[in-house]
View 1 (cartoon, rainbow, N blue to C red):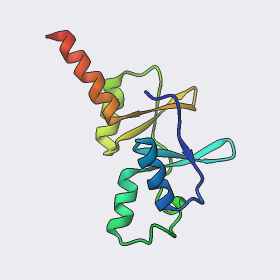
View 2 (view 1 turned 135 degrees about the horizontal axis):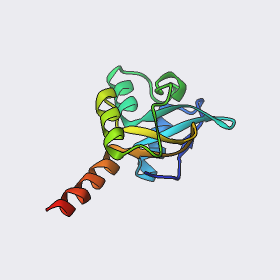
View 3 (view 1 turned 90 degrees about the vertical axis):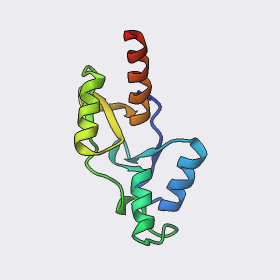
Length: 122
């Protein structure tokens, strides 16, 4: 899990969101309004916008972000997180503590975890 959440405003353009992801080498940004998270924009959302020939220089994050944010409580297993992500066909899952978002787990995080676990079994 990554505890440092990267955020963006819903009024930012998709192009700016893509640039931020590229510069920070990340695949998602949480959309924050005041103290609350209202959605998440991912690489997949940006690719979908480009494929639909949206003008990414003008279209805002709020128009393509995923909402509500899919979450998993921090005390649940990586296997449970994997199952949610697989079932929902998503690659980023917010981690919560008593309903408050405290981090994010990505498909890459789970791959690293399961690779480590499988080496321990060998």
